[in-house]
Image 1 (cartoon, rainbow, N blue to C red):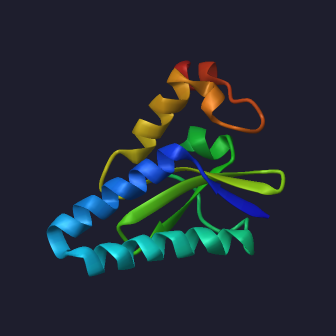
Image 2 (tube, rainbow, N blue to C red):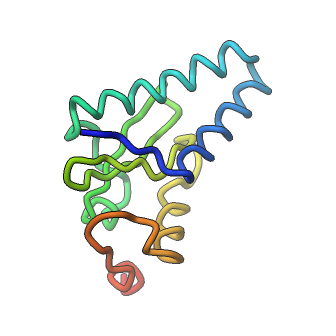
Length: 123
């Protein structure tokens, strides 16, 4: 089992690190970043861990999430023997809305079985 962190997730991680560094300093920012990456690393051994997202459509497509440090969320999906991490975000943001809009705008960004954006639009 391998965990692949996609560019959109790396970007989210960088934004979190920047925000935490500005507010609390480099040491805290590095600790938060390490906690997030460690939670994703555990998915290699426990690929079915995590919990459902707050969005039923994302759940129906097989997306799950892990919370790190109570304030950060990583949304991922298992595809065969790979786990793809799509976003890393602050839990206080509208991360499911942003992610859903990202999928609807460009469904090919999601590796694995195809998604049906029309299903979400019809809701």
